[in-house]
Image 1 (cartoon, rainbow, N blue to C red):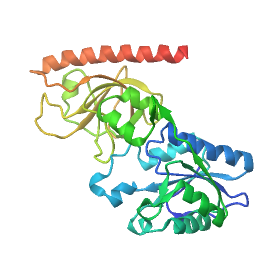
Image 2 (cartoon, helix red, strand yellow):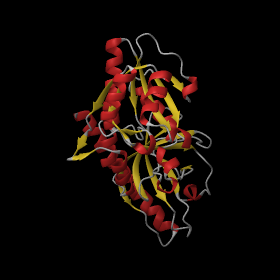
Image 3 (cartoon, rainbow, N blue to C red):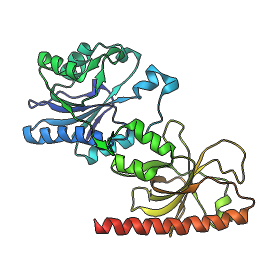
Image 4 (cartoon, one colour):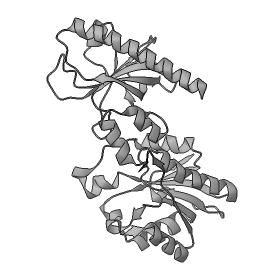
Length: 319
């Protein structure tokens, strides 16, 4: 898969053109997957290049920085998910104040037609674009007829009578409902990064943990303890238990920590890449009177995580 980090890098479209899916696609949830899948299907049928067109940073981070949401997926993770869905290429459009001032017509002419050579464009039916978001999917259809590309507005995906959206998924994570969030995403929510050194308390509790720096721009589940699956450097996932929170037993500060105990794993994790997938919530964050009480609770957490992982494995085999 080719990755273009700016419009200027994009190569000339082939004679068959591009089948482009356009959106922020934060989380690449099931609704996004429907739009992206339509682009892949059209490309396969016509010989076009399937292209995911996304924006970085998130438009809200430029237009309303104080209201900018925490991201469900990093740009790197998003690109990896696009590749898994079968996209041929990804075009990252730099969203800045200048780009935000483009009129809807200018966006269609300069970006979709001139830069991308799009033959067909897929968007969600609620897609907005151009200065102040004044362009709608219906406007895109009209501009497409002028600038030589077809437009398909894809219906939104619902779950439980509500539309699947990145905003809804963030709210579920903030409430600690990681299992429900996974159902909307189509996979568990992931937190990943390079394992950093901690203060070493876990080893003293006979529960050595891998510590991930908490990126304030990325969405985290509500503080608590979770059954997780952890992948080290892209290898097979290991059952694990992950604590998200401020470690109130030992500290009084507000610094959020992500600490993961890999079950039945031995080896040094410092400096290695760790991807943690949140499977289910075990309990909320608590303060314990002493280290021994916390150690006993950790053993209970591990036992509960093993039960949850065993149940998930049985369900997967049954399906």
